[in-house]
Length: 311
Image 1 (cartoon, helix red, strand yellow):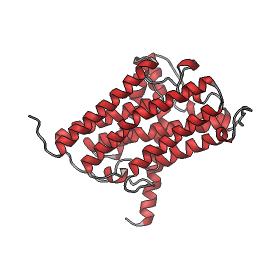
Image 2 (cartoon, helix red, strand yellow):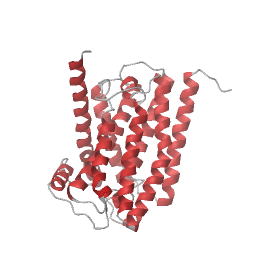
Image 3 (tube, helix red, strand yellow):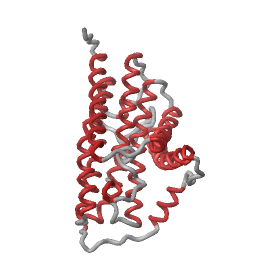
Image 4 (cartoon, helix red, strand yellow):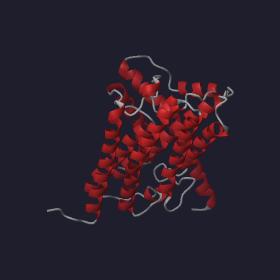
């Protein structure tokens, strides 16, 4: 593939992932509204809300420093950079190198660190509580993320998203089950990374039970808009990876990847309509259960890959 063709394909891949990021919040809102029997907001209401925020200036507390003002740009920049590593099906992403799965994970970790420091910079006890919870949940869910990447690397022999999903390779029927479980783990990781039910509720306004939302209480205007956009991009990145894994297991087709990525939004909407948010004391158990499942999936993949029988 020549350089021009590669760049066109990479730019198209990026445009598709960004389109998924813009559509997913609308899909979640519409799914919730339909299941609740309400008319609900339009598919693009979240775009209107952020558009209004981006047109407004920002107001800063006198207790905050330059760190608080810089964090929204760092958070959005880290998330957008991570998004550039994610391929849609067998399209080539804009950024790719051996071991980029590690870079992907730690770009999100950088964004989390930035938002936690910004919450602590305000001096608010409420935001400090949210920051401590975010740091704890991030540390707990990170092993599940790396186990997922390790499982994909074990099955394919590659440590780059572009190489893992770049070619259509057939897998044995037993390995299909493993890949579908990997997809399920990634979807569950989204609920933690994106602060969705049952871990957190982005619609709540009770500071004592909020996690992500309480950390950004002091942000407004364009800063809050950038943070919300970063949240969409993070959700889309994991949704597309889950869709890629599903397509790898079943039938490799870009259309299937797009439908599966939007299907993640439908799944989140269904969960948020039928399930209540966990008590904070149960969130740790919930996240450790995700890690345990990821560990079991990796162990099973190792046994199948090396044809080891357990008598």
